[in-house]
Length: 360
Image (cartoon, rainbow, N blue to C red; front, side):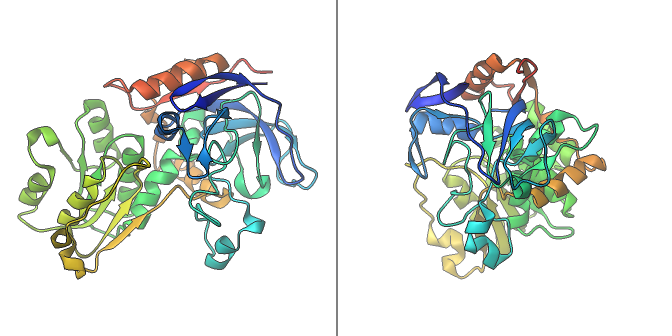
């Protein structure tokens, strides 16, 4: 079969590989809609993932699919079902950490080992792909739901909301969100739904800023108007904020977050850093280590239960996340064009979607 892959560091293209084989708990799916992610482009340039070098590895981890085949122990799905596939698919039975914590955290034995697609095995930019532990990791596509909305649940919406969860947003809190790309936009929406009062969002692209305001931001802060921290503190009358969500920027964003968050506040980072990045945090900005600020960084949680809850927010008109897709492609072969667009990042890009309407 055909798949779009990282061939080696800096090189990507179509490759031919054997079709995946379903184990007893697995499903084989074909894609109905997919979306490239900045994580895919990071992987191309680094040529590495947490599990080691990436060579001839099919890309992609955001997909709505149709079930082609199920393993003998799968009970919730059958061929022909249209399904939402979270990007994080833990092996629940073999992960004691998940069972001990009673959580659908993204990790089991090491960082991101529950992120199977691309990191551990071939991804979803293929004519067929495998979903492990299907009954616990996959969800039926709600009837009548637009593919674009459901596709956002697989990663962007779950990850953005997780930033708000890690920042412990409470009723009436003042929140800062760094970054207004797709994940940042979902972090804003998540903070609003969790009860935030004032939400500052940092960014400069007008189409993203407009969506940020629609999703719940109360004010947009542009670095073009001066130092971001100074602008926010001035608007706050010198008062620090309750929470900061880092959904963009660089390692220096952590220092900015520490300058903004109050003692006993919280920082949630969902930014994906590169292997060569290094954090340097001045002790003064961390209150000499005495500020009781909670700092958490994490990856999109997985599992069917979380996906079902996020889909409910769409189903009952709490959010319309598919608005973030502003480039649309049709056809399996257009995955290449969408990926190149994501890598080149034109100024007006928010996120591309590919509808796969030409696979048997």
